[in-house]
Structures are given as structure tokens and as C-alpha cells.
Image 1: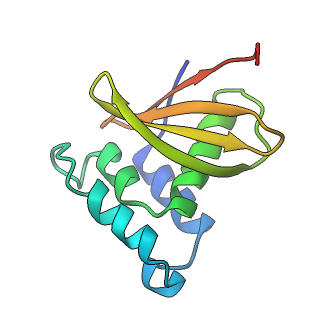
Image 2: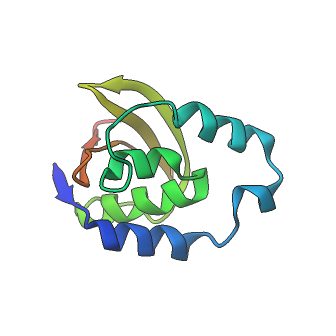
Length: 122
């Protein structure tokens, strides 16, 4: 199931979800993860939503994921955490863990389309 995420909406949601910068968190692991993710070349970062999502910290990225999951009509009250998984079909892939134990696999295309795969049999 795919859902188009508008670039402007993505930026507003990400900024509204977390007002802390990575420097303010003091978490070196987040800083290191952001730097290692930034080496992925997905083209022009100014127009590339994939690159923007990769560059976000965990809290901002989880806000994007909850919005994409809810826009797709799937149940998720809160994304508690997310983990980057190996890329699939040339796109970065994350497991978004919702409260209550439900997880969704989320990838974001450069044009801002969220691709979400969910399993309801587990």
C-alpha cells in the first residue's frame, strides 16, 4: 500500500514532532547514525524526500512514519522505535514498531511516496 507524502507536509510534521536538535540530545550514537546514513547518495537532497528522511534523527523519522502509517489507514497509536534494515529494491527500509507490539515495514521513495508492508497474521 502506498501513500503520497507531500514534501511540505513532511517538513512540517517532522519539525512539529521534535524541537530538539541532535546537539541538544547529546546522544553520540544518534549523531554517528545520522552521519553514516548521510553517505547514501539518493540524488539532490533538496528535492529528495528519501535523503531528507535518512538525515532525520530517530524522533523526527518516527513522526514521519506514524503519519504515513495512519494515512495508509493502518492502526498505530504511536511509533515507539524504528530500526533501519537492509535496503530493499534500492530503497532504505525501516521497521516501525508501534505501541502494542504491531510493526510495519516502511520505505520512502525520493518523490515522497511511503511504501508500507504490514502483516496481520502475527
